[in-house]
View 1 (cartoon, rainbow, N blue to C red):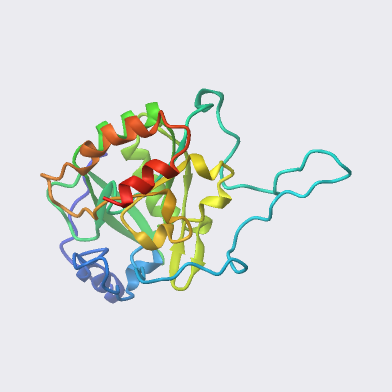
View 2 (tube, one colour):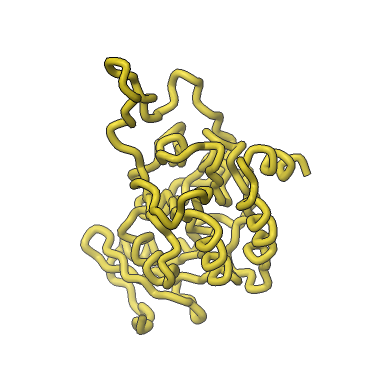
Length: 261
């Protein structure tokens, strides 16, 4: 993509307000409450990291199949994911977050941006400057070989879809899920893994936000939030772990050991 010219003059008050908010997420501790901002209309920037999981009778999940006339149970009307591809039979499903997990994006011009993505907000086109996390290319290529990979972000598709087009040059993501596929629970967009249509004992979520997987913490591989540290090696360091995990019969035992470290 050709880099578009950096905005040097801001005439619209709302645009000025947007561009003045440099970070999509604060670099402060993940345990601290984020303040709402205009970015919440586009990115998954407002998260309450102290959110509690819902009670068993209040979760917003798809109903279980019901047997009819003694015949095999039918699946729910619609799962989030399509039927698994033949090439992915036997593979576990890995759900991967986007912002602060694979990339960091900002409305502020960044000289070393890997991508510049135009996004229309209220009739005005803004340039979103995107940095790739170090080793993300190697990470995605290897994960795509080992797993059925799904991009699941709480950001809006108008931003996340073009970023994913540029990021995933190899087509490693079998599906992409956006904000409308999340469950809005106590101020957070939660990724309800039970709605995917995959066996939960073979589903892993890779995400920097604990609030995103509050319904299924036992399926999570937490990662540190990434902003601009070009010496970061977390994605690279995780690959041996995922290679081993891909050979396990189910994920719960391995992930429990990971959490207990």
